[in-house]
Image 1 (cartoon, rainbow over the protein chains, first blue to last red):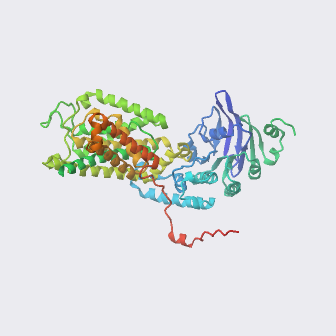
Image 2: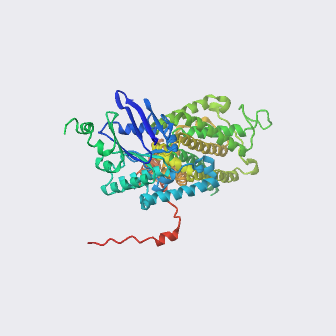
Image 3: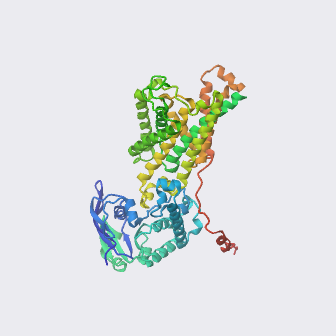
Length: 255
Length: 340
């Protein structure tokens, strides 16, 4: 099967620091891929490079059969690649409900004139987007927070809201940057369960995570990064016993 | 008594002009989050565009004065010219500045307004520089004889333009277009991640704010029938900011109220010398009362920031419209917590 995402030799240096130094990996459609590695391994920078938030110094990113290297972030989002952030970026002074509606795709009412005079096609699309937002709220079981301002939500609820916003984009690939960081344990299990359900519906997910226990249980494929490059990639059960991984994580201590 | 009524009508007209300006700044800052500290430039662009549009051409029999350009257009057309010109200036300003954010945007827009002010002061073929242009024909002035009646009529005209500006700002803010702008205001990176081309949206909001400022400029020129570059100084920008902050950032009714409060505070402090105790103090110091007016305005701002930081009428959260009320009733009642 063709890979949905193909990252080839991407590089990024900040001054003398080579944050990402030739990372290469692929993501198969319908899988959950975990991107792990010790602090400073370049995981989030790799995310930024793939999602177009930061320009690559070199290398290519192929998404859905097209070369998308250097595409601006909003274009990638429209092509079906949506990411979330380590620290959730909710629209704080807007309700959770509006956060979801915001993310609707192809809304004619977002044009100035169509919005101003509220054309028929704008009102129709608004109804569809609202129905979709209802579905997302129900799926994520966060119906009760719809009318709260996003700024008043807990860390875990914000993570769920960000996931919900991503789902509103009808994405082909969701990239989650530490979806379990700062989330209460009870909610961690729920988020993990939702991700599994999404995969069952055919969604492709890439996630960066520190919580190895959760990652090991969740992912189909594991990519371990170290010093800006991919150290090992493969089945989680194989990767976890790999000597090089233990060395990277435990700082060279041989077990 | 009629003197007071006339004074009231004049003050209200001023409040409406500041109200339209506040609606414009609220579109740029309250809705889209773009802090424009050069807002007065857009007001000036509207005022001078109106002036040139309505002045009788130099070769016409109505020509008085020494100005060089006049198109003799009717006032309705002049409003459109003012809106288009100020919108155009806002577009240029936005193209140059809007890639900056926060304080940087505030500083550069402020500087651009200063550049624009120098331009107006020096391009005398447009503005007559320090001489100014007077008289400028006022709308419907020939319909009434009495100067006092005209003040009431003009208040009505200003109210109509304010209403149009309010409807424009409010409809834009409520539309999906406005929702995108509020998202960009809250977090531009997130907005882009969710597929919205933030730059184009911000530019549109900037232009809409400019269009509203242009309308305000037209109403201003019409109200006094004269225009002068010295009217468009940075303090006008700060006053509009005060109106927006007092009234409530992001709330169009709030900023209209803020403009009214601002003008009322400013005008009512004219009467401080009538207060016996203060009159005694002022007798020995001529600059006492004028300074006290600024103290009062400053105090009002401090009180608002302390006790109503979001303004008198804060922005309202936009909630989900309940799709089906019957569904709500059949929903299971929240279980009552019983102590173990």
